[in-house]
Amino acid sequence: MDADTTRIPAADLPSGVRMPLLGLGTAGLLGDGAREAVGWAFGSGYRHLDTATAYGNESEVGAEMRQSGLHREDVFVTTKLPPEHVGRERRTLQESLDALGTGYVDLWLVHWPPGGRAGVDAWRAVVQAAEDGLARAVGVSNHSLAQIDELVDATGVTPAVNQVRWSPFLFDPAFAQGCRERGVVLEGYSPLRSGRLDDETLTEVADRHGKSTAQVVVRWHLQHGTVVIPKSAHRERIVSNADVMDFSLTDDEMATLDALSRRR
Image (cartoon, rainbow, N blue to C red; front, top):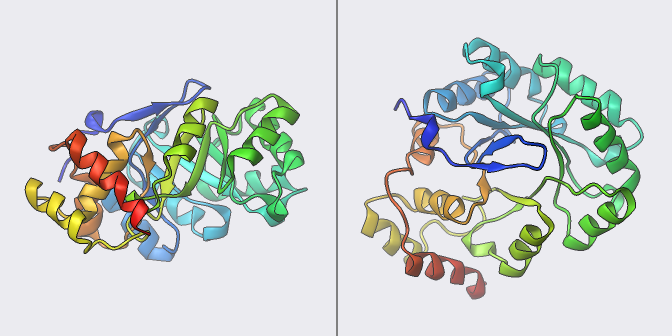
């Protein structure tokens, strides 16, 4: 599939960066497997890659990005700061940039709240890296709304993104609304592993559209304006996860899928 990448919607981050709502998650992809997955993703129209220091695959992701022949500015790249690297944030980011082979990342996230706390000192260092041009946007991952508020109160800078585990089975409208009210873009990881893809309700919706349940889950994220980064090491699944621009879920179907979280 040679996808038309202009059809993939994007979120506008406060710094003026446009973040494609569909990306490839790379957690657990290593070595040649990581390079193959990234290559298949590019061929399927993805222009957003999500990696992290903790994943140990930044070199492979960067190598395939260079090999692709795509212009650097046409690929949105996220990496993340491990909480145990607090105190050496700048060195960690430089190591990520060296591994990726790029002078900047599009988004740098604090991977988890350091020690379970908001991580104000780490956030200050992350913000400084953005001000110095090493990251076009900065955000957090796995943070609560209260922790985000603490960061903003201490620094005056709101995280552009909060990446959390998300799916119709984990849908929390109050949390999603809280992110919107704060101007934080919600990004969902593990969308296809956070509930049963053989769920009867999900299957009924998929059958009506002639799509897989995985495709319906990805489409549900996009219609909520939520960034989604499904991960796979299989070419056919990577291609399929991007083949979601030719159908839309109705308002009733969206509400039905939203309600799956209340059954847990």
